[in-house]
Length: 298
Image (cartoon, rainbow, N blue to C red; front, side, top):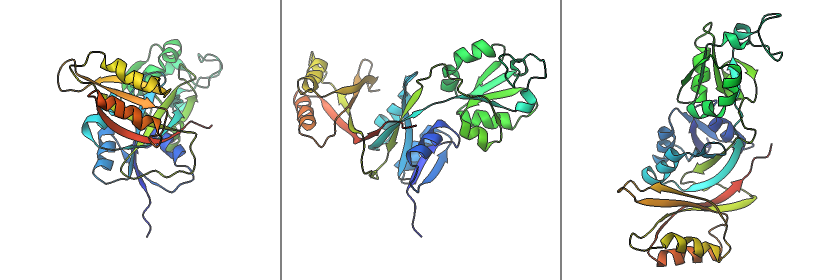
């Protein structure tokens, strides 16, 4: 029996799940769901799965530092691909329980009554992304954060009759048989999340719109102007950097590394030359991956 490629991903019904299903559409893969991001990483690091799907950056909240630190400090998993997926949050609950009565208090013609919602559950990031919607329409509701949007929807499903609602995905709402009380409650329309596919197995694809390379640079301690020299090595070669972020090395106070995303494949002449120049001034360079990059195509 042929064994399918396997992918570790956060809980079923999360945006990681939706993004993984979108990215691997048309391919046969075995999705392994894990409750915690640490378990996602470990699943692939320990050889239980071929890849892990990791949310790494969001247009509203920026970088997910915890996930970056896992890739840097905890595991040795090369980046194999990246893609961007829209994070559309929805208000989820039981329409019959939270519905507005004829001539009742629901505003703007909604089929649900905000006054009947006493508590809202979601992941803290998802909750923050919908702050203005909650403040404008359900300001009285108690807010409680959980480990994922899928867990929030499951909690509402398991507690009928309590006036609870959740913020989460369309997929999780369908999985638990709950209603979409209101779609698209995110405060910003351009809410996209960037996902990384990491693992020891090469991801094969026919074509990709572009390729990127991610590197980690640690500067020499006794070299004033080292960061300027690093950036100059890319600048004069006209190599575009799409992201540069500093994070503590966790070795001592004031010691940082720089995560740099480069819009160029390592299979070129210019990029290896730039890296060699950076290493020549005493910088430590670690290649995190050179990989295809895919935008969302709705």
